[in-house]
Length: 316
Image (spheres, rainbow, N blue to C red):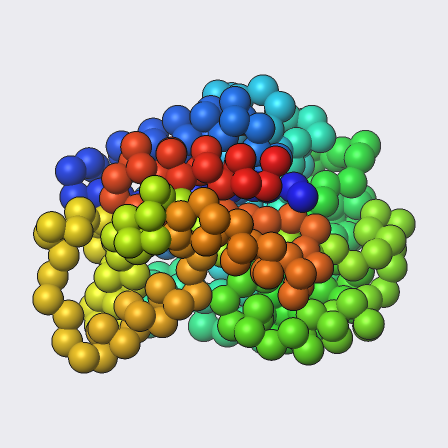
């Protein structure tokens, strides 16, 4: 079972956004030494609490600080960019770090209406056509030649929920799935049944993303998971992801926010080593996953590293 990490460059109350970016690069170095398959970064624009607004630039820094670990996005949000620009960024990364780059492409818009206005985008309706155009630029069959042209295919995956699975199956692309898409097994079965094989992807391929946190006990792991769950609850109310805080500094949550926090916890995988092992085995059995993408974050950076180490031990 391949195991990868997704880092969103989450800010913490005791560290600046710039430090959050440095923390991401440091985590990538550690992940390579620990044996992780790939290190992915995300795209979030103008969201306080999340510092990763430019995944291509961040991946260049990660690539320069590491040697062999795969470099990925999860993802680049195609509605925010022209396909040519995304292709050129990917090709530049591939020229700098040959054979290490993997694009995870999503269709999410900006988090709030002001961000969507700032990005000059308000719809993802053209996602399928834009994705096909991106693939053409990457393989050199587009109307112009994206540079620096590559002599190898760059893997592309779709961050898929709902119609994204249909698009991926039609174009013969791997998928990265998490959250609601995991709650309905029929979606993945339909993806596999309707998948159109290609030269680069002869069979359906599924990466399952989940917030995975391991601690000595289930209760300790729940405390770690609360950092992100409470931030998610606050984001639904304010439109901002606040910096991660220790459990002793958590705000009081109203009934609606508590409900959001509990839903976030319910979708995560956390607990002792044995608890997480059982949950991951069940998750892999339900989804027939080819790869697990651990996407958790928490305030305590030392506890996060210990958790990452434990997860690697469970699946190695």
